[in-house]
Length: 442
Image (tube, rainbow, N blue to C red; front, side):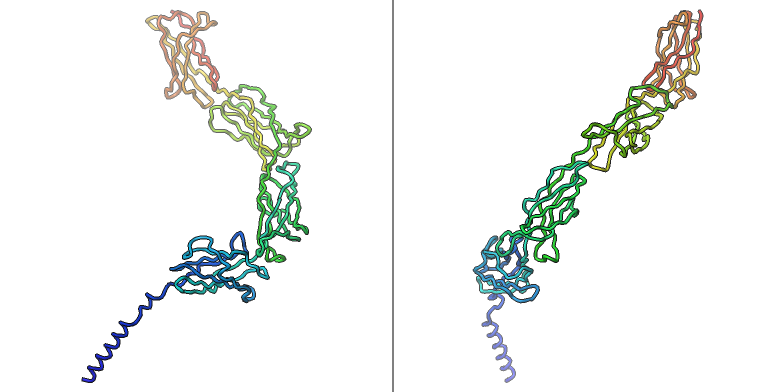
């Protein structure tokens, strides 16, 4: 009986305790969350803190600790902060004024925060205050807007100042190195004078940007990287031109015949046009039909600027000579020669004219094109002459492939006695051809 009563008593006591115990999780609020702390990017002496909670943030206090000595150097009280974005429950606070610290350098920021529910938190490493001098370039300029082949030296002038984090004051940075960069590569390094002014020259070899840059250096460890706006340089090119000496006029040649191209490259100078030595380029033969071009060769001009090439064109077209320099100061130039008309051979391999019983004449024959190409159509004109001297066209037929040649045939009704022959007229690509004449009596 004692044991049973004791057991019931114990159970009753536990029940009473549980019933009267407060709900700890329900009573406890969420502690503030300090997300980060840092310098404001364009105002390094100003401290920014980001925090949020389940109720409004009512207190922020920052402890500034030297990263070098681990010693606390300042405490930023709550009234120094002002909300700059977001809400009191979830926002970003800045110090009203930049911090005034004794030394430049990097500082660890420890942040205490409290909210309206009375919850508090401490973040011993909320972020970093970058308490450095920001370099600022002023009035950076070049002495010219463009360069040319004979004037590639450019003078760069300007001033380098530093913005101090405590006061935001701009002061000259004396005896600081300034890199003068051309196309983002350092071409010269100069130093500032007592007023922060600098001057130096660089060689510019193209249409590239020129810029003044301050890079971090051990002599001035608390001055950050900075750069001026880039100045885009222009290039004034030397004009060049080609003159073709041969073939200067249109000409007609037989297939397989060679043509010599002669051309001269010149450059413009204040004294006029002069031969341009040492320039590279190439010669093409460009078919008038738009077909595949041929590279005739490559060259480097000599002292007289002249190039000479010999080539046997395979069809009608023109030579094209062109020069192009890797030097951006030299303008490219090109020119086409006069038109070269290339004619291929055409021949009649047979022709006959035979009188028919109905007083007509039957003619037939064959043609060949020994240079390898054949016209798209082959019109053959059948001609008549009473005396074999004066000829007139009677009709036109077409030669077609017969398996062994290009054959043609035609019948002439009520043909008079006299002489007959076949004639193929010249085209842009083929010579004319005339068969032998044949006498056909009645």
